[in-house]
Length: 140
Image (tube, rainbow, N blue to C red; front, side, top):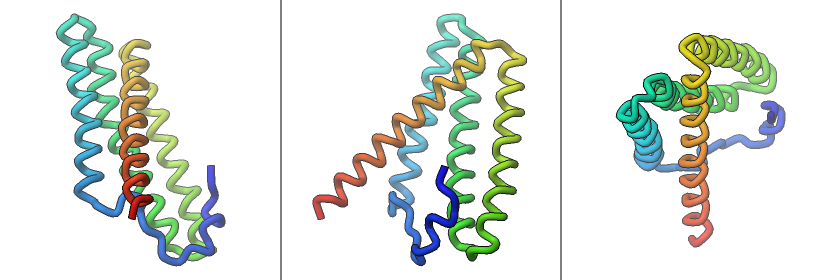
C-alpha cells in the first residue's frame, strides 16, 4: 500500500478518469452485472449465492467510492494531517469490511463467496475501464 508521503511532490492530483459520467457509467455497468448475476443465481435456486452477489456488488461500489473520496481528501491535506487522516479512515474502512464479511458469512459461506466473486467482477470491469482510458490518452 502506498503511503500519502509518496505523493508529497504532486501538487495537482487529478483522477485517472477525468470524465465523471464515464466513471459512473462503468460503475453502473459493473454493479448491474453483479445484480444480473444475482438474479441468474436466484433463478437457479442458489439463494445464498444470489444474496452474496447482489449485496456484494452494492457494497463493493460503496467501498471503491469511499476509497476514491479518501484518496482525494488525503492528498488535499498537508504532509502533517494527510497521513493521520489516512490511517484513521483506513482503519474505519477495514472495520466496516470485517463487519460486512462477518454478516455475509453468518448467512453462509456461499454468500461470502458470492460477494467475493462480485468484488472480482468489479475489479475486472474497473481495470478494463482504466486500461481503455489510458490507451485513449496515449493516442493524443
